[in-house]
Amino acid sequence: MDIAVTEKTGAAIQRAIDAVGASGGGTVLLGPGTYPSGTIWMKSHVELRLAAGAVLLGSADWRDYDDFDHPGLPVTPEGSRKCFIACADAENVAITGQGEINGQGPLFYDRNVPPGEFFPKPAHPRTRMIQFFNCRNVRFEGVSFVDSPGWTMWLCECTEVHADRIRITGCQQMINNDGIDLDACRNVTVSDSFFRTGDDCLILRAIRRGADLPAVCENVLVSNCVLDSPCQGIRIGCPSDDTIRYCQFHDLVLHCRGNGILSQHPEWYLRKNCTGYAHIHDLSFKNCDLDCGRSPILIRCGDGIALRGIHDLVFEDLRIRAKEPVILTGNAASVLENISLNNISGTVENELPLETRFVRRLKIDRFDLTAETGEVKPLVRRSTASWETQF
Image (cartoon, rainbow, N blue to C red; front, side):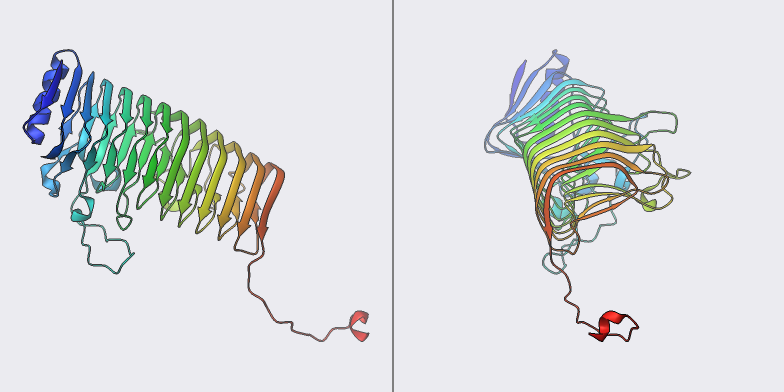
């Protein structure tokens, strides 16, 4: 069954989705125009298609949104369960077209700040634009996702996810408006897409729902994308996560005022009664341009953090312009292992091109990263007994 929605309201869209889902599947089409809405719940075998000129407009009032309550998802990031487009325990779900989904994110904040500074976090909950949990065969294609008040997409425990030719953009003065958070997802492709966010663009996580419940994020392929962020382009894991493995990133352009590729494990990200748990391995980053205000690659384990391992990472054919060096820093309890730097070129506005600590089997080939910027210090002659000073 296919339904073209003529009444421009969120309630009409929800009725159409419910009817198409109940009939066994089909398409809900939004024609040109603006459709104000609160939370919309997607259903199995339903494609929501936004034609060019269609704008699904989220309410600027957080009270117009439902909480995403699910017994399998006890974690509540950023203190909010509010979401705009939600889906749980479904299959064959798609959001496609040339239209726009707009969350009116800046209206959730006090915007009375100096130009360029982050808006302070409001006291009330901020809405996520897309939240899917335990879904299979999910497709996002062509649509623009604009100004999410919180994370743009939080996809949890989803399999067979494909995002192609999408645009995720948000005011870069908003904090925590991530691009796509892939949390314990499997078999994911993100291709030919554009990201401009106020926080990290692409994030891989494996958040454990309970101490005895495994979480694995694996088989993620990201290609042919532009990532523009004042924070990180790509973030990989946090210290209390479970397993992130077998992921590839290639043919990317990263413009970041912060770090380009980050996997940071400090004490302040630890969950209660945890000293570290993450296992991150078999990741590759190839043929990328990184223009960064800080480090192009930063992998760091804080003192006292004991991870199960970070190993078998490949960085190859990277062109770098950055202010800080490539940083690979483990600790005695979390030694980084089997790290390859192949054909790395560019410049670093720093005294060091590469900083390493607690790394086992670091492999470097064709590393041409120039670092020649630093403070020019005057010569200070000191009295010495060396015979050299007598001539």
